[in-house]
Image 1: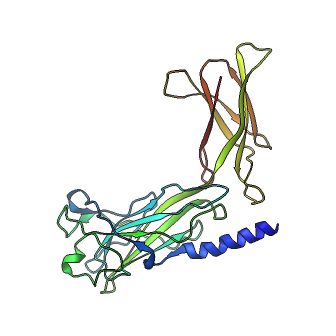
Image 2: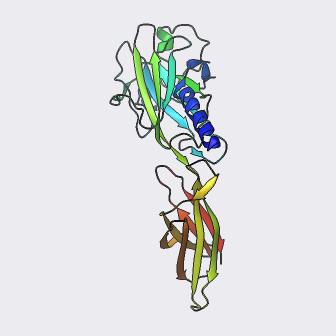
Image 3: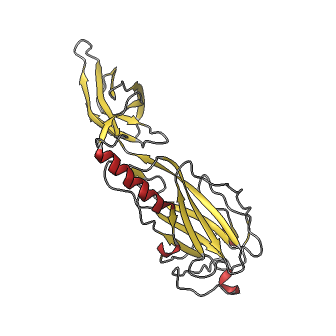
Length: 287
């Protein structure tokens, strides 16, 4: 219990740090690939939102999160890298970033419509964040890449689900634009004790068994059984590349599954497709 309370407190403290990624953590910028025809598009991602750009507002073309679908195991943490492509920003703090966990989203805005950019196609600008004076008319037309490395990684103590990276771009005229990109954070799963054996009373049948595990949500153990989940049994003949789904099974209250299938020479595997909170996993067994 003491370990659980201590780890939970550490996770909550880290969450406060992760929610705000100050501009000082923006790394060295790289060249931004020009969009086709020099057009400006809304931020990338399944849940991207941005304010409509105006004549006095900066423009954010994309917000990209890597890895796209981070998965946390029982130990360690997943470090995020967020790359923001913007133009029309001013000063070393022209772009800021915050990372929001599920359930903490603010008021969202509709995506900006695509429109022609002012810069020449194929001539993007690269800069190191914090090393450029206020943008001039020429600089404002160039795309700049801002790289953020939040100081705290995502580990098992953070809530799984749909997170959001929100970038805000500003200029010296008071203009501001916000764009976001969502990503799915999940916990790791694993199979244990997967076996496929011949059924004695039925010569043409085999039985596949095993246990589905997940990162223990209580924090007492590294992994614990994952009950009442559907798994898929797949088969592949020797020399073939594709897998064929043969049967489905459901884990019991202790995470165990067992399913009898028709005997065949080749390779078998069991697959857990994953959910919004737990990741995909597969395990093979040769017969």
